[in-house]
Amino acid sequence: MLRKTITALAMTATAVLLATGTAQAADAYVATAAPAEGHGSAYWAENGDTLTVCDNEADGWGTRAYIYVPNQPNPANGTVLIKGNDPKSADGCYAYSENISETTALSIKVCLYSGATVDFCDYRRIR
Image 1 (tube, rainbow, N blue to C red):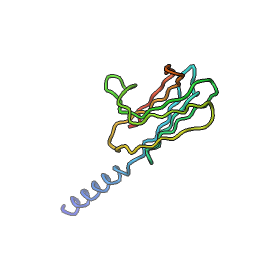
Image 2 (cartoon, rainbow, N blue to C red):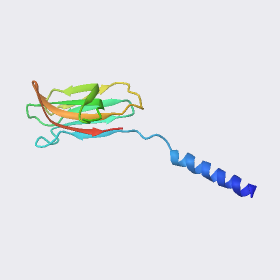
Image 3 (cartoon, rainbow, N blue to C red):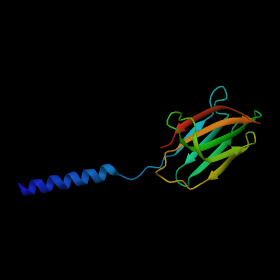
Image 4 (tube, rainbow, N blue to C red):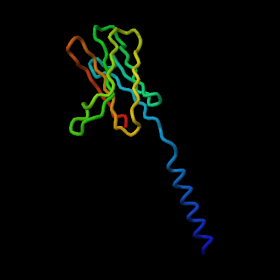
């Protein structure tokens, strides 16, 4: 009886340890919304806490991206932690890094902008 109890406890402990596993990096990608779908994009790399902003079209618009803590009633907005621009047209990407706690709830948002006009935004929850 004692042997069965010890074996059952050992198997349970092993299962819990295996189920826990290792923490997964929360990388994320988002592209601008239609009708300018894909004209701008942003990528968040958890390892290194880096936001990469890309302007993919020579359309007269720049691309702006944000890493932010989302608001509860309006998850498309929140407290901005990183804001980065790629002001050029279809010329590559710009990277911005900032050390952010692994326990902070994050979202990524990308928009096109021209002067004071910001449009074609899309966002995605990271963690």
